[in-house]
Image (cartoon, rainbow, N blue to C red; front, side):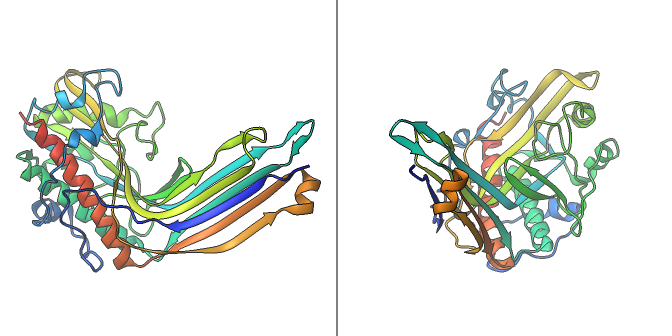
Length: 362
């Protein structure tokens, strides 16, 4: 009987950053967080709009997938209210691969299973909060640079009193595991955390949790503005897997990890309501905007090391019918290096979102 193989690999991946994003992060840790109103008035004056075609990075439609393209909706008003904002920082991730045993005359193989767990260590929650505050301020500044009228933070307060809010703080941030990853989420200082609907998979709302999505349209009507509430996901590692196969089709189970900071996901609802019935937009625009490809940076931010490795191979694999391997790895960073890389990718993502609004201005 032939034993199926296991391969676990780890590399430091240098990913070329996307063109047109000249401003990168400050070298040190970001400044201490201030309240939302101060952030809205501030912003990073050095951030300009990236020279890209934002349509290649964002997509969406009315009704989620089947309606009119979201790009066709953005010219109906110039006012934009960023009524919510979240950054999900991935802290742990898992990947696995397997090969099932096969039994054919002259070609019997054992099975194989490989798994990897990777986490990031060395960055504290105060740093994550500061990164979030900076990204929010930059988005507001970029939207203004794009020619949009941004609704002041003071006008957002009535909405927060109507929403179902999610408890979260710097000391005890909201956390969730999804898509093989675990992340902690932060909203800007002074802005409560809330989730739009179940379409944002990092939120805490189920399919029937529609209170917030039915609250936003009336608020949009009152403001005569688009309301958005984006979630940006900042990942630190790219995991790979050879998948699950029969021993007839593969002879090894392979998993691996490459370090990189990237904004891998972004989603926001988009509502501009002229008429509201039953909490839903009866006349106006109601859609979602999604990121279609990641924003990355080539900044080195961490050192990867394996802290634990378990293997079942050879005779034991033949006895049990399967070889197994589990690798636990840690990416060790510090606040300054992590901030520089995370800020670099969020600068790109927030600038590109504003560019998307600029390309489809009234």
